[in-house]
Image (cartoon, rainbow, N blue to C red; front, side, top):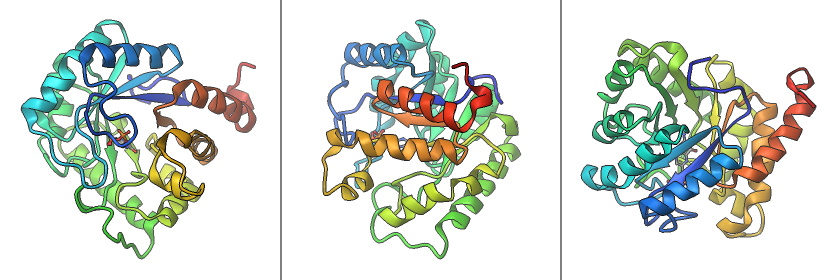
Length: 275
Ligand code: HH2
């Protein structure tokens, strides 16, 4: 496992420095509020803080690079200086470069180096870790009637190809984490099938990141519950993902998911438990 990845289950706390993220947009737009939020998530047990300055929700408007950088740079700098492991959630080389210089250790690219292929060389140059995620197309259009013959084998083939691209650009294979991209160009059934057959993605041999937190399919499965009432669904899906072999769990509600995963991990992997 690469240097920045602690022992699993690794909980990655979401720090959205945006006005428009789907579940917490506008809450942490000021740097002070974002830093305070990150500190709280770390205290609750997040081993990594994922700082993002651009919403990727379906239909989101793109954010200019200068603005995205202005949002995230001071937050990354202050949280990294306080000793926290930081990933930067961006698809842009310029934003990633600033975040890595400010102390980030991981680049979380929801486009898997498709939007700006030069990001791979930057990751290699900085000896950083990276998370490569599957998305169907781009955020503006990804939820317009997504279609697959077999969602799991198509996502798997995509991730294998992106892993190969990353290594061709000089990123060591053991620096790459993979993510099936729950909610990124997927119907409710696609998301459920990816979770049910997550072991097939895990079989690629790289740590798997899973991000179900508060996402809309959880609302649809629970009679239309809004974002703030999707924690039970978030926990259920993260526990299933752990059982299927996921390593990193990207969530907003850190304290509750840490406890749920501790119990789940002690149940399915008693040899790793200290309880
Ligand atoms: N999901 C979101 C953003 N980044 N990164 C990875 N690796 N995996 C995910 O599933 C993932 C991600 C969307 O969640 P959020 O950041 O809360 O919302 P928004 O994109 O609206 O800011």
